[in-house]
Image 1 (cartoon, rainbow, N blue to C red):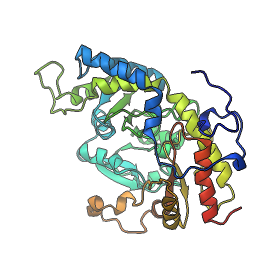
Image 2 (image 1 turned 135 degrees about the vertical axis):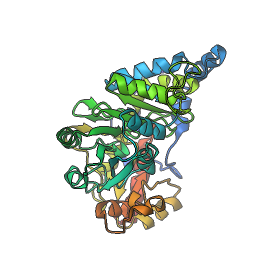
Image 3 (image 1 turned 120 degrees about the horizontal axis):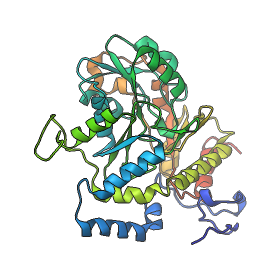
Length: 398
């Protein structure tokens, strides 16, 4: 169905298709707003999804089938990289990207103290040691000015995270990596389609990891991941490792893994990739409306770096009254999330590294204050206004 100009009575139009704002007085606020609504995109493409899955079922090539190879090529073209290799999860992608570059036992990798734990786990699974570095003031990525002090003779790579869909400060990171002869592996698991000075996140370093967890900007209907690589050697190494270390059936050159993006998920992701930019545009428009409506509230909103276009995997704010605000929104039926409420250096699994509270003060402050608001393709202006109105009410802002 072709897009039409929504009227002021069309309360369910996605933010991404609005031509002009609807006056708040004309809106009937919903009883609640979910944190994420995956059903919207799946209903939009339901018939095409069913046909794509049926095609795989009828062909029967469920593992490393033709759809997987096609999706790898299409995603590589979308990113502007030479190679993409599908793997089982985003976590596997981080691990295998590092291993493919020769990072392993006895090595150290720079990791932001504020990110999802899988970033650091990928380093550990490769046999290396994560070295934490504090993040920028608003918690959207590694602080480049703090990296060099953390480098040692054992450092082999820097692992910047495009957290929340915001590209990290890649120019400074890449410049430092070149001077110190270090690899750069991007964690782009939350940044499908994000732009850094005209280039896609995931196309800037030596390799990159993507996750296709269902709630991601480009999400499967199960688990899935991808390694993007600039070199033939690294891509070949990932292809070997993901499939039991086999260059040919029952010939094992390396101790490999069972980490393959299956053909059903590949078919689903091919279908969704063609809509990714449009869905990301809807996220950006919703984020713009949040920014406008929350401008007078005593909260801090993350600012994109100059020359970047984030894709708002989540929309976060920082508030000293985070816990009370979250409870207030929950009582109104509004879903929220915490990304993330404990930095990595204070997690029990890393207690043997000897860190203590206060070691990374910015990460700790962000963890105390961060709150993620509803954000998904198809979120309506009505829903965004409902969330913002309740936040303004909490802070008694008119």
